[in-house]
Image (tube, rainbow, N blue to C red; front, side):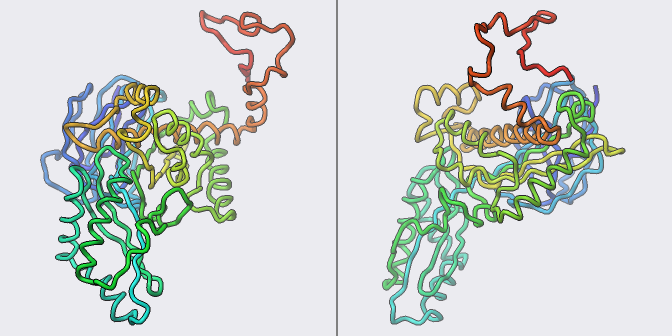
Length: 423
C-alpha cells in the first residue's frame, strides 16, 4: 500500500509508534535532525536541500496497513502556531495519522517587591529592563544552570503589578517534571539579581504566575510542561461502521459542544469533551502528580471534513501544557515504574535527555484524541446514556443467576459481550 503525505523537506522521521503517522502544520518548526532506523521505505523529493520555507515536498511511504511513523521537531515551538494545512492526505481505512511535537518547558513564577518609598518608574521598571537585557539574562542563566546537571534556563517572562514584580522562569529539565529544579535555580538567580538591586525583597518563590495546579490562561497561552498536537484522519467507512455516525454529525456536534458551549461557559483550555479523564488515568498509572491534571488537561479538539469530497474526518487535539516526567516523584513506585517500562519510557534517556518525557507526552495526547473521538461519536449517535447503562459495573442491572458463560456468546471463536449492539 502507498500513502502520500506532505512533509516539510527538513523534517526527519524519528519514531515508530503504533498510533502515529505525521503531517506538518506549522511553518515555524525546525527539524530535530535525529535519525533512527524505520521499518518502512521512504522517498523524499528535495530531501537534501537546506530549505526552511513553508512549502511542502511530497513523501511517498510504502508500508503495510498498520505500520506508522512520526516526526519530532525542535524543542521550542509556538504553543498555538498559525496553521498551514496540507493540500491532501490519503490513508487506508485501517490507518490513522498523528503529529505530536513537544516543547520542554517548565516554569515557576515568584514575587519580588521594591521599597514602598521608591517610584515605580525608577525602580520597578528598571529591574524589569535590567533582567530583560540579553547580557544580564546570560548572567542569570549562568547562575541558574549551575544549580543542576539538567536544568537549563531558556527565557524569562515578567509582569508588573504596582510595586510587585512577577517573574516567570522557563527552563529545560530533562526527563523530570522539574519543579524542584526550577525552584532551586530560580532562588539562586534571584539572589544574584539582588546584588544589583539590594532593596529588592523576595516575597515568595512561587507567586502563582507559574501557574501550578490552578486554571490559568497563562498556561493555555504560553504553555507549561510539554506542548503537543496530535492529529488523525478517520476514513468515512470507519465513521459509519465503527463509530455509528457521520462525519457531518461529528463536525457539527464538536463545534456546538466543544467550541460554542465551552465559550459560553467561559472555559480556559476546556475546548474538549473529556480530556481530563484520560490525562488523570495516565497520570495515576505512570506516577505523575494527579493534581497537575488541572493544567495538563488543557485541550482543544477540532474536527473538519477531509478528502477531495469531504467524506473523511480530520481530528486534532492541541494540548499546550502537559506537565509530565519519567523520573522522580511517583515514577519510582513499582506499579508505576512497570507501566512506564511497558510504554518504553522508564527513567531518563541517557542518549537524549528529555526524549522519554517527550514521548510520554505524545502518548498522552494520542490517547486523549482516541477518547475524544469515542465520546463525540457516542454523543453524535445518541448512544451515550445507553452505553453507560449497558457498560456500567452495577450488578443490579444483570439478570439473576447470571454467569460469565451465560452472558457471553461465542461467534467465530471470539467472545462477544452481551451488550454488543446489533445495529
